[in-house]
Image 1 (tube, rainbow, N blue to C red):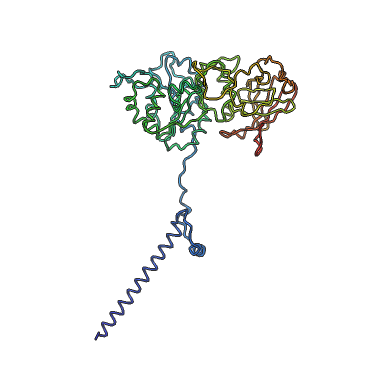
Image 2 (cartoon, rainbow, N blue to C red):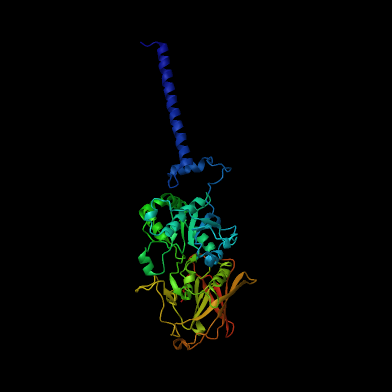
Length: 487
């Protein structure tokens, strides 16, 4: 028989075990409820029971109000871009005005790189130009005897030398030539679309099929400019000299970079606003029908005629930049509208030109550039990377009356007013198919656009035409109505 003391001990042990079980059950329930209330995954759907419990029981905020929200990256601005301008002492005094037209002292960051120090005639160095750097001497490299085009390797290595000039605030490295005009505000907004913490190689190929065929349709042409995000530039800088070891025979720096990036597993992202301008002669038919994307650059200015009549090339570029200083978002952007009483079509290239057609022309057709230009090199068709309109200049229904940008101002109604003037007569009879309404008397067009609302990248505007008299026309830009058909 068990003693009374033994029975008491057994009973006490039973009670203790029961209490422990209860404590464990209660602790588990508390921990489960804490998990549900504080750490539920965002896509977790609670049961009806848990939902009702959450509604009835108070929840302690796991993140007190004094705790700041997670840090987010500020939008990209011009200080986040490091520009590298590739130049030559042999041509700098003739080409410097192109980079000076867009360089903003104490605002834009970067350098112009030369093969040797500036000559005495260029010193002291102008504050209007980017600060200069001299590229590293590569003649002592083991691979140097095998390098076929040393100057192109110098240009290629500018990527690495520019990276060394960067800092923790640099998000993008933009490479370009000394005869290229950059449209900085548009570039900042375009690069702001991309996550600079990822690997990006952004640029555009040539306008000519042959140039792309000779090198690659997937290569960014450096004259037009290209952008490398910081992580990709860091990777290229680390691997660059190894690329030179593999490709000492390549004759173009752009091809070296393209090959190096391909070896690393990266490919181009095209932005159509970069323009190599592999064209010759009169480029007005190309510039008047810009693709529906922000203008980012213009290269090879010396290979085409001055872009405005009766001006030399530097003056013409300054004239374009005068419009760009007021509103880069609309610069060269095409806007089309109609004057039905006269059966006229107006095609406006903001800040550059205004074309009047004596016929109702489809927008899809007017997006094709007028072939006023020649290719960079002779080639068999297809010549260009885009459709063109050619053989139309003797047709009174298809040849436009051309007016060019003359001036820009702001009025008292928060509008930008650009004025376009006729420089010469068309010297063709009226278009008989659309009523013989000649536009020959129109000598001035005034265009009104918003000073408060920039054009969104890739966006389009509508416009209305008002005839003031036989010589002057007004065109008022406006947002398109929902579902408006512009035809």
